[in-house]
Length: 293
Image (cartoon, rainbow, N blue to C red; front, side, top):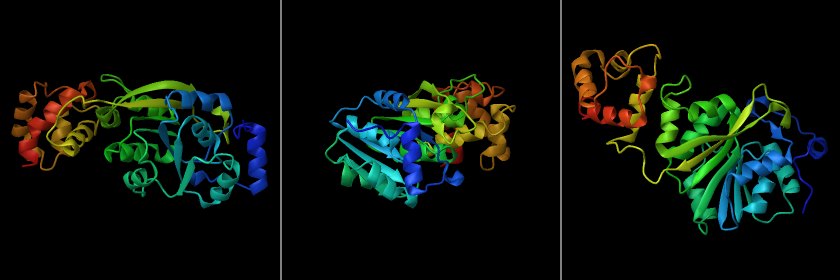
């Protein structure tokens, strides 16, 4: 068993050896607590038959824990300066592939085909950079990748928004976009003290598990998300007002919006945050003929 990368002392040694300085613009906060890393990995339920995809390995703290449990790890790192560091820290492991790329621009489906074709079970496990958590998550969800789910660390506030239920303040279009694809639960909160440098906010680990079937069948997924985004545009407004002001030519189509709301059995004076995903699905399908045909 190799000495863990993620201890404060070892982390400092590695940073010093490479003269590495943190780039704020890349949201670099490295974990320095092996117990927390072990817990994160345990939530992913990996075996040697599984593969893991990681985003932003840093100096390899989480990567090595994944490599110990999974059959193979593919990790996306955008920061060129970390490539030689990773080559060094992860040298004891032969089941890791580092891809030097911005995951937002990468063809992830193709990389899975090339690198992970032998694996039926694939999980995304990552300590996501805070400033791009949402775009990364949405990209990985919407590209319909062959993954079982994700175990991802992020700012606690974002994790709370993603896992929120209708009728709560945190519930919004992000909750719906993610929960349409996956069941979302916050499995642990992580204090800022276990990071170097310490972020200003607490973090949480979110476990996402793919639904066997989406919670609602819709005609057009992207239109569903357009309707949900429109419904939350101004939280104090009613669903009718938001749809009128946000959907293309909505003001002129007030009658049609009212017909669709009636058809979906939704009171026009309700607010977006009171609607469930199923209700949004019915509403999107009722609005579809008036806005998409």
